[in-house]
Length: 286
Ligand code: FES
Image (tube, rainbow, N blue to C red):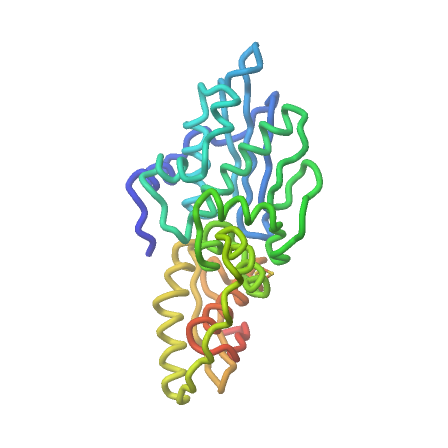
């Protein structure tokens, strides 16, 4: 289970400022249901159109997405637009007493929605963002096709949060968390940001016996994968292992979920990273 702070739990159980503002001055919408998280932020300004007098949100996502959105609306009420624009995703996480690194993408989504709302309200071009949104076109090269995330967006998050590994980038943006096909490109971007050369290819994996491989698969599913699914109300069951084919069945919120294909790819990538690069995950009815 995630180690959430009391403040995260409190904002999740009693979220502030839920709903829309019919006559909102600025709206920022990021994410998509297909990606598993979506946030729409509404902002109402004072008569001078400078200070935020109300902010509300609608979100679809996990508990930390709700808590981050709730915190964000509380943080920006009373701020000028310039002050609000300076709010970083780390400040949203700090307001909540911290977020597990695996959930930092929720704070990034909040900062994205805020920036998008303010910049488009001011008539500027939509900022470089990763997620699909309702204003403007995406800019830059789409690096992660599964989540529609661009190089400019990833570079910005890497720089602002001083990220050093592809796993951290996945935690902060979700990029690389489904099929994993974009991970080499993410590593290149990290290397560029850090001013280094692209990382050398990893050492060849040691050969595993069948027994050891099965043990490792079970350990990774129990210790690395299932706790992440539990946090979002889901679960999976290991059905069978035949050579490199791992059959899983989704349970609870994951069963019949529209994005279970992405989740299966995430499980496969985790097993490839931590057990063996030839693993193929199959979702079966269990
Ligand atoms: S392309 Fe990035 S996870 Fe699939």
